[in-house]
Structure formats: structure tokens, C-alpha cells
Length: 452
Image 1 (cartoon, one colour):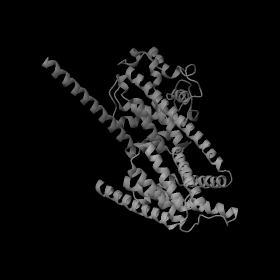
Image 2 (cartoon, rainbow, N blue to C red):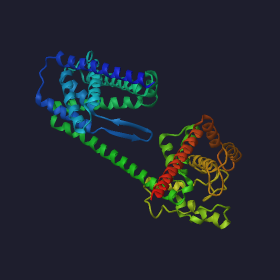
Image 3 (cartoon, rainbow, N blue to C red):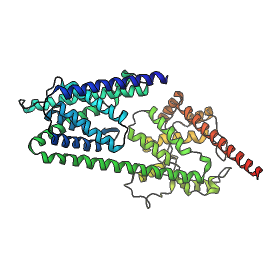
Image 4 (spheres, helix red, strand yellow):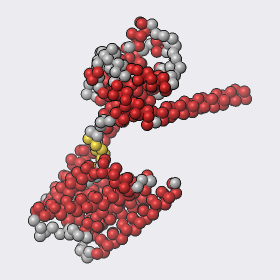
């Protein structure tokens, strides 16, 4: 199956490069307009700087990449024509890829050819000379050029991704329409307005053009710092889980599985944004971190807990170890505070606060079901794992009392889809591999000992 896909991908890449080179040669030699070398160098530098400022933007559940190179390209076209832009494109992108140490193929060739195609086609019927047009007509020409160029670029990228992932163009376009077309049009409009500003400044105060890069540089710094903070938070969460697992090895990635079960259930429940799913994932991973405070003799006791021991184990959600250690404005503080609520019950008989029904956040109601499922279907120090059928029956009987019945229904949908069982199979495979690795190490140790 991979061979046809790879063959189709190679054919597409070769065809796009041939068409792109043809478009480049057409745009370069079709016009006899002279090119000012100083302007060529300055605009190539603009394009290079714009490429360097590319950054990932995340706003709630929307994520996209902001690359203002398109605005530079549109400005260069309407100021100097297609030939000038194509030369700027070649030099600017070449400098960028050489600095980044990207291989010239396929990165450079793919980008240049896609850009050439997406600019040459609209240039055939939208002239670059705007001198004799009224102000509204100039805006309309720039927006129209931006839309056509942007849609062609999107189509080419969808074709490339489709061949890479073995997805038909129709499916790729449906994904694009559902998930990204609105954002694409917003970006195209922003680029059109930014290119108009570039054109205006270049014609009247060219020294001010570099000032337009300042806000985008600030935005890039903000987004990169945000990503670094997220990475540090992820490291902190992993460290907390590692400490917990070192204390209670019997959990065997319990928190990670609960997190995954909860996200799967939430997706079948429906109506959750990416931000809410991310919250469920993080709180799920942290829900048992309070067990660090529980004594080992209680946490690892093989028999039934005494009333005093049961009250002690409740410390893992009753003890607020956030207030005096983590500033409340940190996201980690919010996640840890929410993690304390995973033992609240739908009927109000849970702890630590006795919250009832919708007083408990829906995210926590989902995590509670996921936690119960994993606790029942995996081995514990005090009992063997229960069968899936027994665990499902327990959940069904507890709907409306211990757990939210709507969440139970969503969990059953997830189970019927096979996603829950797939995660269980993945866990069993990991355990088997761990056991096999342990046996191999033991065998190596015994062989070494016997040779001595």
C-alpha cells in the first residue's frame, strides 16, 4: 500500500516543481522591466525577516501558524511586478533555509514552486499597476489577489498532505472546510491589509516599513515563552507522577490511563472544546498526586483498611498543599485544586466537600468515572482485577448515585466503539514487554553470575 502512495507523492512533487519552474521562468522573462538591485536586496531581506517571524498561534481552541511572508510577497508584486517578486522570493527564502540549515530539497524547492504557482496564476488577470485605480479599487484588487493566491496555496498543500497521508483530495478539502477554512480566510484578509500598509509606507515613508515587524516580533516572543511555560509545566507534571509511581509502583501508569479514558469519554459525551479536553487530560494525570502524602503502610496495605486508615488515605484530596506553595495564577495550581474533587459523588456523599450533581464540574464527573473504571479493571495490592463485564455492571448500578448517568452513557458509547478496549490492550502489551525485559535482565544476570 505504501508504494503507490510514495509513487503518487513523487509524481506530484515532480509535477509541481516542473510547473513551478515554468511559472518562475514565465514571470521572470515575460517582463522586460528593470530591477533595482538595492530594492531587490531590501525586499529580499524583508521576506527573510518575515520568514524568521513565523510562529504558532493558539487562541482557545484555535491553532494556526502566522507567516507574514505572504504580505511581503503581495506588497512586492503590486509595487514592482511579478518578475521582481519572484526574484525576491528566491533570494529571501534561500537565505532563510540556508540559515535554518534545511535541505534545499524538498523544503526550498517545494516552497518556491508552490509560491510561484500561487502568484503567477492570479497575476495573469490581476495587473500589478494600481496607479490609475481609485482607493476602493486598489483595496479590492489586493484582497482579490490575496484570496486567489491563498486558495491556490491551500489547495496545493492539501494535495501534498493528501498524498503523504494517503487521503483523497475530497477528504482533505472536507477537513480543511470543517477545521481551518475560516482561519485561513482571516489570515488572507490580514495579509491583504498588511500588504496595503506596506505599499503605502514604501511609497511615502520607506524608512518606516521595518517598524511593521516590531509587533510581530513581540507576538513571536510571547508565543514562544508560552510554549516554554507549557513545556515546563509538562515536565513538572511528569515529575510529580514519577514521584507518585516511585512511592506506589502498583499504580502502573494509572494516572496516565485515567487521563486517556477521560478524554475518550469526553469526546463521546460531546460539546467539549480543545481547551476543555486539555484540562481533562491534565487534571486526569494529576488526580492522584496527593497520595504522596499518604503513609506507605496504608497505601500498600493488602487487606481492608480500618476506619482510621480510611480517614488517613482521604488526605490525598483533603490536604490543600497548593495554597502555600504554588501561586494561584499558575495553571498548575488550578489543575491541582480541581484534582482534589475527583472523589466527589453525584449524590453528594463524596469527599472532601460533599458536592452534589452539577455542583461538580462536568470535567471532574468524567474523570471520576474513568478513575473508577481503571481502578476496577487493573490489579490492586488488596485484590485482583475485575472483568470488564463486572466493571461495566458496577458502573451501570452506580449511575445516578455515585456517578453522573449522562457520563456513564458516554462511557458506554466509548466502550461500544472499541476505544476503551484498545487502550486496555495497549496497557497489557506494555506490561508484557516490561515483564519480558525484566526476565531478560534476570537471565543476563544469572548467566554472568554462573560464569564467575
